[in-house]
Image 1 (cartoon, rainbow over the protein chains, first blue to last red):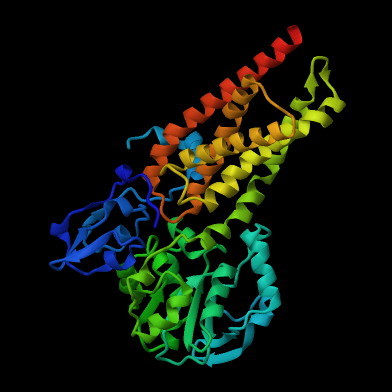
Image 2: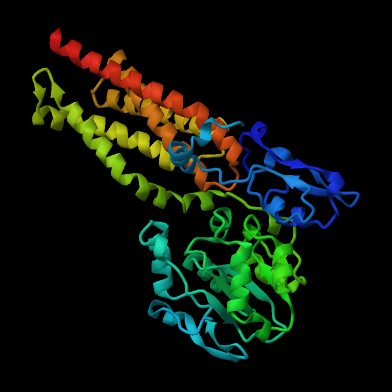
Length: 89
Length: 357
């Protein structure tokens, strides 16, 4: 898989909250998460596309990301209405 | 309930299966000519937003109370992908109403949601049809659906199936286990190529309008607009514009992995610059040499066009993040605007100087 602008990725994991259910590993389409000693671990942060699947399916709230669709045209469309682009990050 | 089916989909239904929740249409796994024609049209952007299947429960093969229940979107291309791959499989298919949008995009937009799955399971009376409280959702529905919430609200456990429909038979045969490879999205040359016609269709009108402007500008000589000049030189400028648009909309997606840069706007600019170089060489060959000023005007106007169109392709890929796109857009748009403004200014200057001198 090709890689994009990795420094911008906002994915975070608090492994102390993880109960080892493996859902995040199951739903990630890029193999970003892996299991280690029965806890999730971010194995490839730069491969994350911020789709939010792992966050949505983590029942312990251990994961966080600014989820959304990486589409410039949608973003530009939102700017006029919400000034989305001037926000932090 | 999927009692009736659109007249346009009658060829899809082989018959009906009686269940405690009423008759369920049995789906043909042989794609007909009309399905292929429909796919072709949708891939070209023709009626793509209205190519949908009535939501509700369907049957593949002859499923029973213990057969697996697959859940999917009501986009016809999605439905057809399942039909193509599920020959010989006995399963239920619960089609949920995603507004005719594919699984991943509808999940990303929050249409394919926990609430939709819960509502659809209840509306289809699924609890009366199957004894096994288990759903197989497409993995790419996960951005919109919380497996835990679905279980809490319906009693059905959610297993996420593979990314691609063609892996479903192997997934089911392995006791609903997906390999790592089944869980990964890909973006192969073939997957990129099928996106190009829709992209072209979306940009065709503005692209041709710009080409027309270029054609007219090309006919501006010392004595104002002349049709003879436009005929003689205008097509050259119109072709410059069309080429730059194709560099952004066709060449960039096709050669994506090999074009330098990670930012799409950079890739598009590289493609646009390559087009300017190739086109200028062609013009030289045709005896239509350009001066330094014209070179510069071409570069300043055409490269941002390719760059912007390539930036738009971020929304069609399976690996660009929102944060990355924000970062890139915030940097690219000012550069694109600056380049266009200076290009127009320089073109006007050259034109006026030609008139005065």
